[in-house]
Each structure stands twice: as C-alpha cells, then as structure tokens.
Image (cartoon, rainbow, N blue to C red; front, side, top):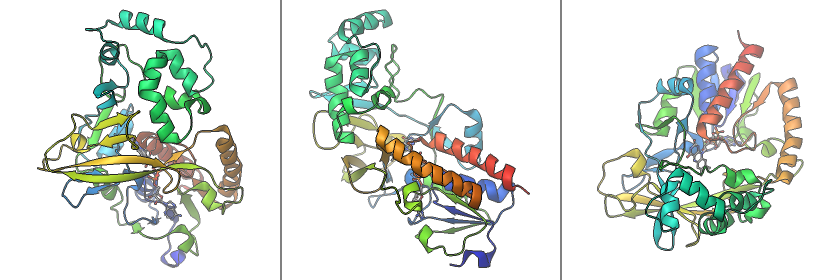
Length: 374
Ligand SMILES: Cc1cc2nc3c(=O)[nH]c(=O)nc-3n(C[C@H](O)[C@H](O)[C@H](O)COP(=O)(O)OP(=O)(O)OC[C@H]3O[C@@H](n4cnc5c(N)ncnc54)[C@H](O)[C@@H]3O)c2cc1C
C-alpha cells in the first residue's frame, strides 16, 4: 500500500485503545484523513473480546476490568457504548478455601480464624503479625511490613514467583504494593469510583469509535509494510522494534491462555480465582460474571505465565527501565524531527490500565493538535 497515494494526513500504527482514540480524535476534531493499521486481524488491541466457538463471550488477552475515577473520560467513552456494572470480585485459593482478595476485614477474620474483626482489631492484629521494616526496599519487604509472613506466603510469594519468574525480593516495592489492604468489608477488586464494562464488549466499543468516513482501517498489516508514510505518524507498537533493537531487546513477560468450555451456566462464584500455591496457572477467569451473558455453557480461562510470546507485562527492573530510557531519547528526537509520536504501553514500555492509556492518548492528541492543528 502506498499510503501517500491516498493522501492520508496521518498514519496510526496499532488499533488498540490508543490507536483507536487517536484515530477518532484526529478524524473528528481535526478533519484528518487517517490510516489506522494493525498487524493483528482485529481492532481493540489487548482489550479484544469475541465469541468463543461455544458461543460464550471471552476476553482473548486476559480479563479486562474497566475502571476509572474520571467522569470526563467516562463521558467521552459513553459516546460509543452503553455500560453495565463491573462486578469485579476476586478470591484467592489457599488450603482448599477461597479468601476475598485484596485483603480486607473478611479476609483477615477468615484467615486468622476470628468470628469477625473491627478495623481497630484488624490493625492491632496486623501490628502483631507484621515485620518491623520502616523503608521496604523490595516487594517481599513491603508485604512483610504490611501483613507479616503467614499472609505473604499464602497470597503473594507463590503468585509473584509464577507471574514474574522472579522472587519478590528482586522486585520493586511497587509491584506488590499496588494491591490495597482494606480495613473495611469492601470485597471489590479495585477502589475506583466507576467500575463498568461495555454492554456489547470492548471490540464493539472500539469498532464504533473508529467507524468514521475519514478513517481507513487496514488489519493484518505491519508497520514495516508501509513504504511511504504520511507527514505525521503515531506509533503504538514496541519502541525497541521501531529502532530495530539497536540497544538490545526490552524484556516482557508473556501469558498463555487455555480456554476450556464447561457444560454448566457457571462454575466459579466470582470472575477470578488466584492460585498462589497450587497448579502451574496463576488464575482462572470466568468472564461471564462480568459480561453477564445468558448462556447454558461457560468458558474458564487458565492463565500460564511464560517468558516467550506476545509482550504483556514490562518486567519492572532498574536495568529494563534504563534500557527503555535509551530508546526514549531516540524517540524524542524522532518526534522532534520527523513528527513520529510514541504512545501506549508497548511504545512507552509501561503497564497502563485502559483508562490510564486512554488519558495518555488524549494528552498526546492535545500535543499533536497544538503542533499540527489546522
Ligand atoms: C493480561 C492483561 C490484563 C489486563 N487487564 C486489564 C484490566 O483488567 N483493566 C484495564 O483497565 N486494563 C487491563 N490491561 C491493560 C490494557 O490491555 C492496556 O491498557 C491497553 O490494551 C493498552 O492499549 P494500547 O493501545 O497501548 O496497546 P495494545 O492494546 O497492546 O494495542 C497495541 C496494538 O498495536 C499493534 N501493533 C504492535 N506493533 C505493530 C506493528 N509493528 N504494526 C502494526 N500493528 C502493531 C498490536 O497488534 C496491538 O493490537 C490488561 C493487560 C493485559 C496484558
């Protein structure tokens, strides 16, 4: 495809959330003619959902629990979808029992064999259990300093080892520190004000967002196939790939999903069960609890972390971050001199939730508009 023949104003590489949002903004706000490409056969990036052969809707690349604290972001997305309530509840399996996760008063009471606990009693209990580490240097020290050894070993250690193939003592405090510990009985997975899921799914949302006469979508098309580029490019692919891995490859953790059909309406009590100490998989997901689809069968996704495969999670070590910064320096020059903008989780080598990455895309759009608006 010779993209300049068709007089595109902008090429957007990657039709994930970032690519779709920027395509929509450029088409509707700037009147640009947009070429949006993706090497995969679908839009929506890792938020992609589809109907499995059984007829049950699945989240192809892991469960996506949409949440945000931003009303304006929600208003923006509501142009393209209706919503249903999130219903995000996670339990952690330990010694044949299921514990609400993240840890809250109910988890603490169940774990330590109490009838119930008030917030003050729970704080006093954890004061006894926790280790005295004032400035935790890594994830192990962080969790030990919050909940002590028993809960660390029950819920965090094995899960982290499987997920990252690294010991929590080799990961920064923020990796396990992201998970809240609550002194109330709120069992929801996350704290955000708006916890909603698109009524018809994420793929339908992003398809509607990009359904505009100014937007041409070309799927199964890699960036390397585009020979002549329009004057502006937004790149949401891996930053190291863009620079031909000149400084070496950035490390990612990948996942393998094993989808299994079950012959009953539901098999789990909630969408996600974490397995810290049992099995090779980290979690099982029954997304029907979120999609609320009415169907006589269900599908369980078993998640196996692995080193090779699609890039899912940047590995949060200092060395990887330093390598990313070297690429970022080149990317900044590319933006300055060639109008190539880098945005998104692959291009910024950072784990972002969908709401965060869309807010980044909207900020990138403001920057682009200030430089190239007409
Ligand atoms: C397992 C997992 C679970 C998640 N769960 C949640 C969750 O519960 N809640 C939440 O808010 N967020 C969740 N996320 C995060 C969410 O997936 C991301 O925030 C979001 O998908 C990032 O959007 P993006 O556009 O930056 O990247 P992506 O969605 O990855 O899209 C990038 C696109 O670029 C394409 N591409 C890459 N290179 C090229 C190339 N050279 N040529 C053409 N196309 C290319 C890719 O095929 C891809 O479709 C999860 C992520 C993972 C991995």
